[in-house]
Length: 495
Image (cartoon, rainbow, N blue to C red; front, side, top):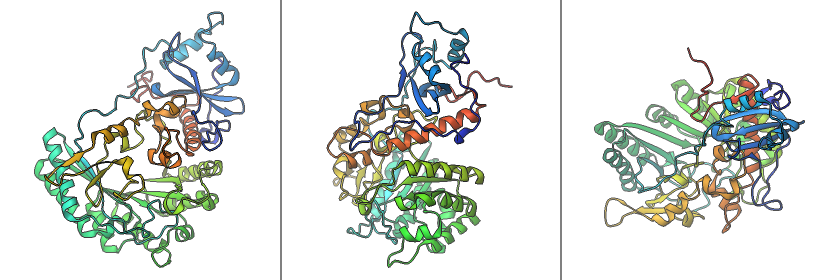
């Protein structure tokens, strides 16, 4: 077995994946990556992928078994010959593979999370306004450059009542409200507070648990920050790190910096014990400062986690130089080590090792996000009837003759059909079940009117998922990572 299973990997993240294929879409291949080492059949009972790390090392990875180990190129080649009747097979190797279900393990079970049937939401997102008190230069929504839209109270009330009524009718035990928008939702303050109070009042009367979350830029009057800390369960706060970075890319209306009021809000949230994540957007010019920005946020404040994403080339940033580069990956790796040292989790949205799903986000599972005009959007980046891709993501609207909603089932079902199991482009990629196709809105923005081809983010997702594999193997002792199909290692002894 020693010729196949590599010496234990104990460096975790510091074992840098160097040999991954970079899938490009403007000049290179358009049919997706091809990482498949073996498919179910013969001795194999799993779909197994080869993830090259460089330096004669490969991760052998079976995502549906949640299993991986490191081998050499010679070991990889030996595994590829496993079904060759003329090739000798090491019994210890077979026992090792069998212990993870990779051979003789019975059929694999893909995720059973595809949606069918009617849309009966018990969670709602309110796009409260397209107005904003900042003028971020990379804003995907071009907030401040478009006609302002404000959600009136009757639209918000109908949406809140709908999810509570659905929960009661279906026997659900909880409801959820998310406050979002193509602008800063807290600017529509009266509707925001009324929606929160109505959800909680109606949920309490119906015996339901209620969760309220918020996406915000954090530039708030102190009294509003205090109210949110007392009435909202958690928030995602956009914050780009070092004050000079924040001020350069996220100025207030009129051009003044936004770092001082934002940091005042974070300090108040920390003092109140409020739960929040930070969301860092990285432009090309700020990639060299990413690690310092993450370290600043992780050591100065108390976020649960920090999300890092390259700036999207949409809205005001449509013509900017891309940050979706190998330099971003390298900077993220350094930032990961800084976050580890500070004890704060760092994440990138499409690298989610251990998750097995058809769904990257709610687009394929009937997100019930209501625009200011009462339309239903399946995508957080389509926040208005006037959004550029509204025709592809708006799948219903308030019934003008009743108190419910009219659902365009054809459009809704077309969104459901973008679950990752339906994407030929993703079929040969080792990250397909954890990435789940990444952001459909971005893929359509890059390739309008074309079949699904992923996006320029694919190479970032693959590199960072490979990092997570190496890290998981190292943290599991260096020989293998095995969480098992249900997320637990059935070979571990229990006491």
